[in-house]
Image (cartoon, rainbow, N blue to C red; front, top):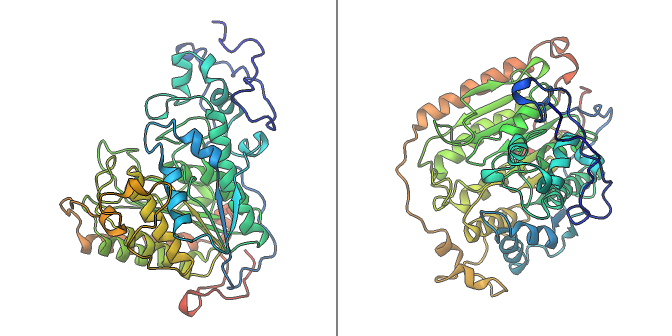
Length: 458
């Protein structure tokens, strides 16, 4: 059968920012008869890691903030089927509370094709730009359907999403900031050659790859109610990145992965930790589990940098997930603990499908991290003030009907102990048995969460 990709189609200039190199839609390799004409699955899901740096100094110090946003990305995001105005509300509320005073605020620059290809395949990126010329079957092969239905400007949306997270990561790598924030990022479901779960690009993977060019070890913490499957899969074969995901895992609940246990392959065996938590989860148990597991992970793994994917779809009134009963205060407290370990911190967004609630939660998280918490309960008047009615206070926005709590605190804490024991076993494996994935340093967390200034070479 003749491939439908025959010919030399080029990107539509209206779909791609003018500064982007314009690749051609490549002909895929020969496929089995049953799938002829469809792009083959990528044989390698894992990301290619840059070499580890030989020297590093991440001693504690001030945490100047670099904050990335994009008015153009907000416009493009308005076409998404969920939380179409979330980006606008989030940045508006954060600005209205004065949380960006003294911060370096940057407009996101679209990631280049070369940068996107650090993880994503050329064929997939071509499909993002040429989706209008593909058949329904071809779009489906790349996941461009249902919750990832394509829309005008899709490639630019993906490039800006990735570019913002790459800018934030670069600020940490250069030492320009100790705290970098891109709340339009955190798209943790996208694969190398497939969209998934409202995620068209995996900006998290791309940002971590950028961090690995300057930091030997990166700790990825994911508190979205949905499992961080795309990020875990990308780094499952290295011990330089430890992924830890707290999420709901149940039959029929997206994405269906993330069962309790330590995962990973080869050098990365034991460096992907999953802690599923039940419906009705409250702040108290969430924070106990986060302190126990994430704190123990930070002590054992001794990261040089931390990435926090702070999806807030675990809020009690979230209309899509509808599973957990967390409050903005719970997310802020978890973020504060991650910052207290003294490492450079990249804060990304994620899920959160009631836009005013997501804005309130992320404003509270940022206020905690920059030392301006608690925020006044009365929401300041600004362009989107009417969205917070009828109460127009932070507390009224986060009022909720609590789902039934199905969690078992004692079992959750035992699960944390089990995961930490598995991690310690992975860390203590002889370095040679982990291959080129990299070993652990001999340093540790100093008292009060501050980092020792000297590190043993990995």
